[in-house]
Amino acid sequence: MSRTSPAFPIALLLLVMPAASVLQFRAIAPLALVALVATVVLAWRAEKRPPAPRGAPLWAALALFGWAALSALWALEPKRALLDALSLGGFALLGAAAAGAVARAEDAAKHRLALWLAAGLAAGVELAAIDYATGNALRAAVRGLREAPATLGFGIKPAITVFAVLLPLALAAPIALWMRAALAIAAVAVALWLPAESAKLAILAGLAGGGIAALAPRLTFRLVAAGLAAVILAAPPLFGAVLGSGFNAERLPPSAAHRLVIWDFALERIADRPIAGWGLEASRAVPGGRDVAPERTLQRLHLTSPASRDWFGRSAAQRLPLHPHNGPLQVWLELGLIGAVLAAALVVTLAAAARHRPASMGALVAAAVVGGLSYGVWQGWWIALLLVLIAAANGLPRRSAAPVGAGGASAVRPSPAPGSP
Image (cartoon, rainbow, N blue to C red; front, side):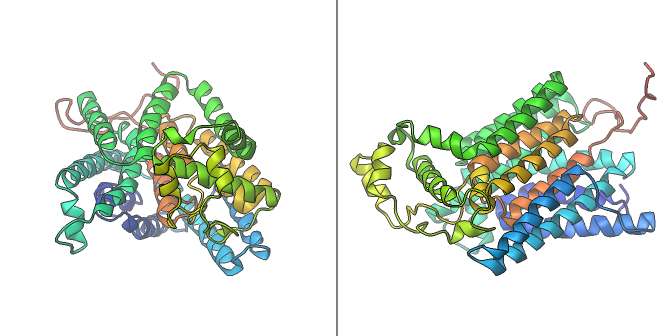
């Protein structure tokens, strides 16, 4: 691949990002920013004009972030809400321009991008396994620590998330079937081994979504688009019905039970401002979020054992620490019903864009699972990862190629003309 190809920066990023996410996941955002800017610059030089960002997902995203910017008028932290909304909008424009540039790249560049994606993911999975097997020694060394503290192990979770969303795309690379199977088995095995519960579900859901999309693309598109939109739009009554039905959270691990306590509190605050929400990034400052769960909440969720009372009596067990750990509820909490409608429109356009590529549909499903169970929906590294994911999906080769590892050298071969046998 020529280094002047617009696909080169994204390909290089995909080669190093999985391993970089293991060592320090916060590197994802700056690395992605550099790669996206470089992609746009190279496309500008090659096409003699700046690549124009376009597409239905972009307009849906800009509508959502425009509403988020307007929410600064009533947000608890107006300056933060406005600046973050503008930043998200700018990031969306940059990502859309880069994705379009990658989509127009030459077939040989797309072929190499897919190979580097598979190679990078394989290297990241291996590095994560080595680090975990050595008690996080590699990650401790990167931080200048002689011994790894117990809490360091939890920092590997974002790396498993990276594996989960990239795996469906990597399995579309032009490599031999046995290589794809080995990559899938290794990635799933490491994800199930390491401590990252939401990522474990995501990697399995992504594989299932991509597999089903390959067999029934139209049905999968309809189910994914309708399902994701319905979960977003119906999140408050849906989660309220579950939490209010006498659900016994005592049977769950403390961290999972804490999620339910957080969601229960988020529902209370959503009910206070259901139409417009509390403003972008208000999750950090919503009233009562720093308190511990009251007795009535613990009783309703059956968190009454001595161990649960001790765990939820700690000051760290806040009712809303930073964000709800649930994308739909965070959108409702901060941007209200209007934001939820715009977010639902965004996921529908993303599903429509992915409907012709099973790998892209699998990646979307994996990302949706992570977004519904973990991380703040506006976190910089997460948004950066999603934009890279879209660019990578646009970089999947459309022409057939001799698979690497299937005997002989890899070479791009033109696809048959439309309608030919």
